[in-house]
Image (cartoon, rainbow, N blue to C red; front, side, top):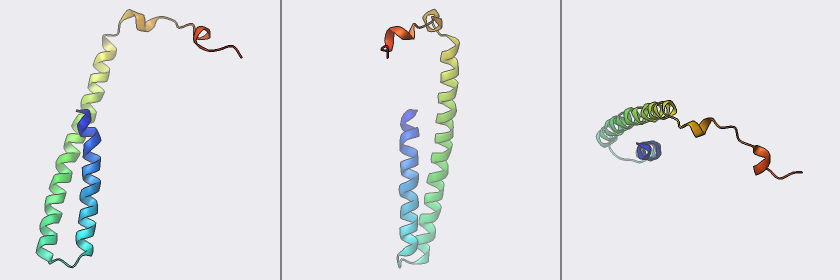
Length: 85
């Protein structure tokens, strides 16, 4: 799930760069239109997976907060960890 969160924005950026480069080149209109449709479909699918992965991570975090161990509620003596100045 976290791999989707890492990889999908990179793929979207690369696809947008390719679409921009294709529009700047002197290729025919049919190839440009076909690539636009394929790029839009890929970005839409990645956006759906990205959103589902984000929601899944939020649900997992809330679920893990429900079953916290008792040691998570202990008071920490911070002066033990911080040096005296």
